[in-house]
Length: 178
Length: 251
Image 1 (cartoon, rainbow over the protein chains, first blue to last red):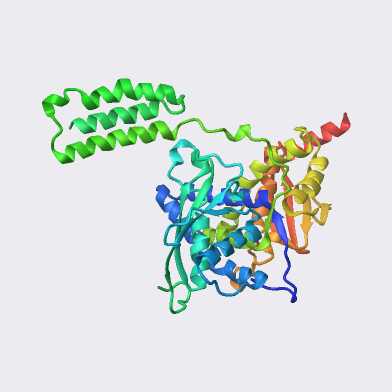
Image 2: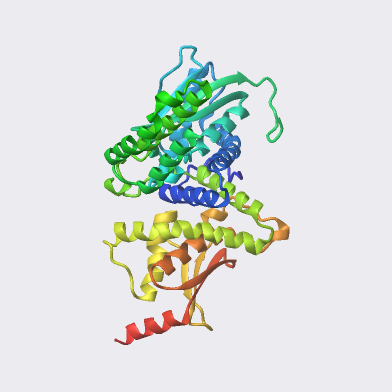
């Protein structure tokens, strides 16, 4: 992303434009793919592409250094959501080994105005977020995976995104190779 | 096989009873599928493990089906937000870039890509019509052409991009054509157009939004985006629309 001048601008756009643009993208994917699973996968991949670039922005804005432990990471992911989407998820449900936690969303700008029709119940509408987290963490040498444990669009009372630590990546792998 | 029959019965129920209340569905399942599941179980005795598993699968599927269509609070029960929410620009820029890349991978020429972007924009525009008129105009739509264009230039632009479009001009040589000019559209901000695709303007996305809104409000028009004084959106109305507007003015 090009940077103008030295000052980092904290410009924003209307969240409804964001919501509806994302909606248009998902609609298009639903039209182009016959299989809902492929749509989920594609959304995750797009999220990954966003994540590997968004992390730069995050580091530049917050000036945060390395994480001491996974709890630290959780807080930074939470901060990321606040910074970029303007929502603050709650961190809960730590696993005993401290390698897995949940982010609970009361609201989510991605899913505003959204209702899933009954034939799309397998669609993970906000799956782009799992990709963003994976991409961003990979860029700071951490392999994580995440998935939706609960989803308001499917009738749950909150949206719960579960994040699991897999391993530390020893060598930074360039994006696009594995 | 027995299991297949049951599954068919469940599938049929699913199609027929889509959207009815869950009590009805539970009853329907009870009366139509359950007897099939258990009928004469003693005779064919599902002791083979595979069969038992198959049967359980049908049951589970039924349970999911009943649960899945359980009425949720509808989106219409929520009150309309005031639309002041904001997200970070980088987020939007990256999302938009993914959108453009995705479109680009599915087409081969620049005009096709522009059409695809416009299509996506239309998807957004259609939804913005109601949102804006309900929120800003007390559900009253514009019926004069110029007012409609001004509405787009000011109200729509403010809602979408936080400021008005720079200019609205009427073409000198064609009365059907209007121009909305914006020096620095947010969608083009982080996009560098490759040299071999010089004519590509990703603001076609915005053009799509405008077109959908005009068409949705009964002002059939074609909207395209061009590189001119920044980005110029050329709005070309159909003859009938101009004629109608003149009639309105005469009255």
